[in-house]
Length: 163
Image 1 (cartoon, rainbow, N blue to C red):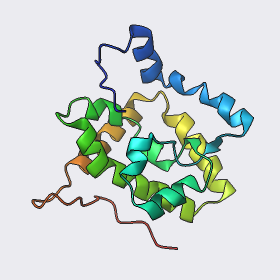
Image 2: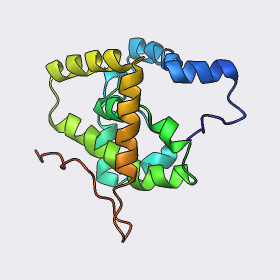
Image 3: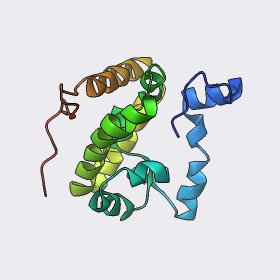
């Protein structure tokens, strides 16, 4: 579920599509069909959903998945950072996924139509920005580096406000 950037099964064209984010365009068809929305928690593979608390899963699945969300903006370069990690899947599940889920739940708790418009514009502004990619990579590295000696995750950002 987490493909390394240099994985042999990814073709040169596929690598370009992933890097340019053009691989997300087919999901617009799902938006037009009504299966997805433009903004909402990104869809997850079942393996990742199973790693979450049941109440969290229910909250995330209570709305249509989206093409983008605040976590996608913050961590959109996760693939580049995870590609350098020896156990990317385990780190994703234990550290990065919980950080992303906190952002997604915060979005759900504070949703407004204006917030969705802001997220769409932020996504478009960052899509092909090398500077935004570098900032996102730094953010992902910071989240992965915030595990304390006991192995518990400490998010570098304050937790979202409870509703």
